[in-house]
Image 1 (cartoon, rainbow, N blue to C red):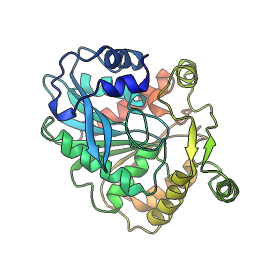
Image 2 (image 1 turned 45 degrees about the vertical axis):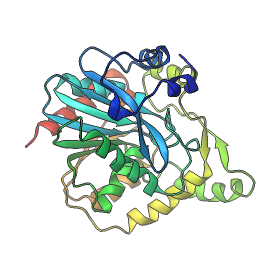
Image 3 (image 1 turned 135 degrees about the horizontal axis):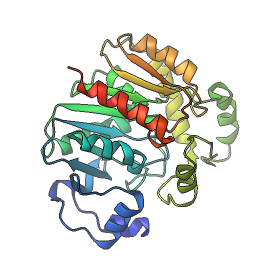
Length: 308
């Protein structure tokens, strides 16, 4: 795959793209991550949010009945959703997905943020960029950190644009969350970043190997600024009023990345009309799990999107 800077140099404004031929570096990026196919018109380019250029993709089938906005997890990028993008577009659902600030091909300090407000603003700015090109109704799918971002929009009453919402393995507390507060105090006295610790977060061995050896856009370290922002956001979400929107919550019961027991309890309290579906045997990466788990996850989302 081409270097990140070469791909970024080949990006134009998302609003001006028409799915025509892209430069070689961009085409190599699509091929490396499995992000392009003949089943949908594919627009790729940047949009602005918070003074940054963020990388976005639009997938538009010839005929579609809704559009889903996907929000990826921490340290990752758009390619985390390659299987879901194909699944949805094959079922006449257009897809809009972007790299969060500081992730993938987007601008910003690597995996760093001072407030979750920057993330929620990015989602709103992306939706504004999407609307001229993809008609609604709109849905949102947030995975892990993306789930927290969508929750923040719900808590602030800013998710009205989304008729349906899916939270997949949503991040509230991660594993060993309370213990990490002490670790944060120690590390933050002498550094602002720590190396990423890789976990067995999927049963798909091919995915794990690619993620660790060929995914050059994956962030390799955690920002302690981001950790502090997550601590602050947890206080906010714990104090928020319950939301009555009927959302879909998906969670694997072998997930060791997030503290899913705590998270599901909180989600049941904050979203009493939510539908919780446990994926027995699945780890954290629900959209990159072994195929038997991935099919179950996709099927639940497909059924939910078909509901009136």
